[in-house]
Length: 315
Image 1 (cartoon, one colour):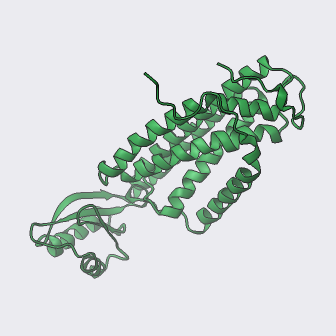
Image 2: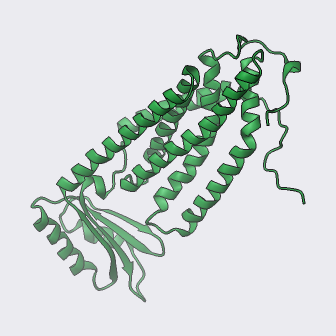
Image 3: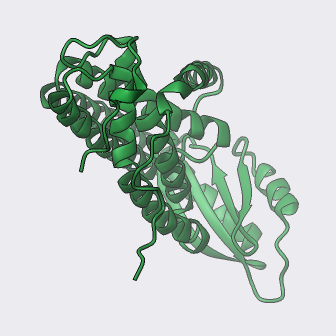
């Protein structure tokens, strides 16, 4: 029985040649992400901004009307209200944080019930006060920073200096691009989003470590091989595993995007994009970066090219 091969076992694709396109592209996207983040910012959810979130589901025989709900909600006088349609005609209404603490939020719910009880069922009501939202912002930020620092320290002690720098650059690249995805798509950034970012950091680390472990192994085995050819061999010899991992993870996440419901849709979409970002980064950012910082195997110069010296892929 012949096994399915998503990538040829004996491939010799020149990935390093594409670094002249991948590096400018990644640099442009990263700079654009920083600019957009400073200009537009993230679409913070109720976890971080505070306020009241209500999800309305039309009752049988009633057709949802986003425009009417938006007009009615804005007429309450509670400030600019965000109204969006999702799922099978359901509507989410997000009221901004009101003065007066719990009394102010209670008044919001009274108005909402008076206006929408006739035509809509209240599937979800969530209220977060200013103190709670502030604590969540602080805790979430500290958690992300400490996690990233711990990962970077692990990479520094896990690999030689050049390999560690390449892995650190790739991980930071993936974090920046993921944040850019939140900025561009306006996906709500909440506590679930922090979980998505941390999961992507772990996935990025896993992809990079696999390639760099093979790189270190080949550096010891082929001490006279030119660096560019050695890195190509590292990627080609691990590409089958990379493709299988990415495909199986992406298919699982695609099922969550299509059938997981609105509660985890944002998380699933970001994770699905993160698989693509991390796979791209391990091949076209982290590994080519080693050439620019002068990684050498056994004294071989990066510029040296001798195609006849290329051995078979390591097992």
